[in-house]
Length: 408
Image (cartoon, rainbow, N blue to C red; front, side, top):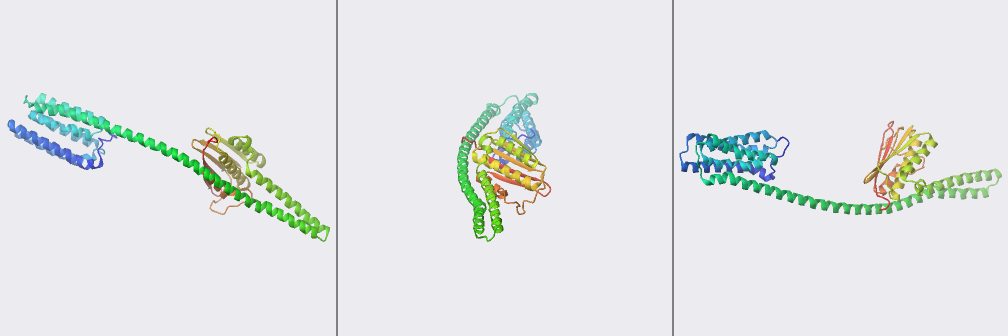
């Protein structure tokens, strides 16, 4: 019985059930005593046992709300109740009806599977005691109806009520499941709409970013080239003209480098002919070859082609995280982990470098799109970005994106 919840009673019933069943038991006991006194002499022993049984029933009031926490007290109370009923049944057959009070008490005092044993004991013990020690061999017909038919009808009603309760619970569960499925479908539609809006916002953000890049690099470089050419035309000596033309050459070379970098930032070439796991593995090999840092790339789960925006985001974040670790962290090992986990895809980039304080101003040499830009890029595709680092403890970049297939 330990760990089993007793018969379910609603919160209001918890307050009323104990007094109610105690009152019903005492009322039945008084009725049996009056009926027995009307038919024959009721001795002092019978009255004493009846009084003790009535007092015992009053213990149900404080016991009932504690029956789940103290199940053995409930067993002791029920055993005492049956003992009183059996003793009264041996003294007068009329008290057999009093034993019937134990049937409803058994159903509410114990859990369903244990109430079966309590009901069986209620049916057997008083009749068995009366057959062994009883002196009255005759009893009115209603006594047998109350002690046999009545409990059977109550048990049938109880089983039917439990079945109705289960049917209602199953119907409510089915309705809740239907509502949940509808909510999931609506959520999927809203998520797709959110991703579309985020994609559009990402396009605008990317255009603004490219505009800033062109203004800060190509436009300024071309302006410098024009200025130096004009200065060369006005130069009064060959040496001065040569110096300006050298600066033109440097500015043109730098501008060409910036132009190539800007074009490459628009579309990762490794993703055009390869799947994302292969592209990340190739990126790791390339960084290892160029920097000497040991970079590993692992993929877990079942890889599925994702929307291009999602794969580009994951690739760019990995690319920038590796570049930062290579340039600033002075790491000896870098691990790239791509995980396909059902509804989401996870990217982790961890290094054993010097680390830094994330709360301090970000450092950089102007290349790449930086930590803030990584966050914005991830946010534009409805993902989450997390960064963990501390001085001397390396750096970990974590990205989580919705795993939306490419054919959706």
